[in-house]
Image 1 (tube, rainbow, N blue to C red):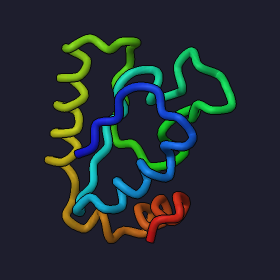
Image 2 (image 1 turned 90 degrees about the vertical axis):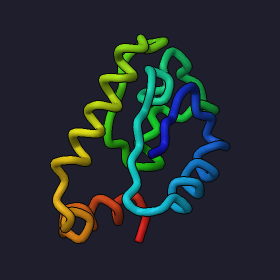
Image 3 (image 1 turned 60 degrees about the horizontal axis):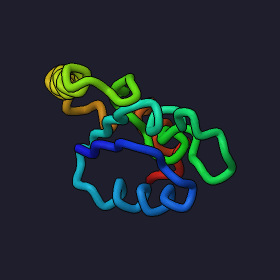
Image 4 (image 1 turned 90 degrees about the horizontal axis):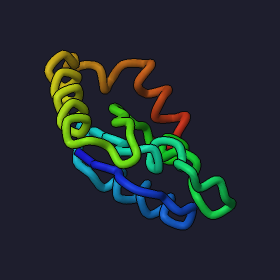
Length: 105
């Protein structure tokens, strides 16, 4: 599980992607706060406007800063997602198309 929190600079994008690819399967990503989800109030050339431009995100936690209850709720949502996921989801055609859209084999 990868917890992404805070502002993501465009220079950090390739490094974050490399960390994501080095993670063991299955990979799970939670974007915490407005800065990781949408760039927050920083609308400049150097800030990535959403982490989902680089890696796929499973759960978004809203808030700036997010409340502790929100973070716990996000982790519980991820737990439900993991619990209800089929073992074959990662081999399904829609999942493979999603990964190919990010350029991940």
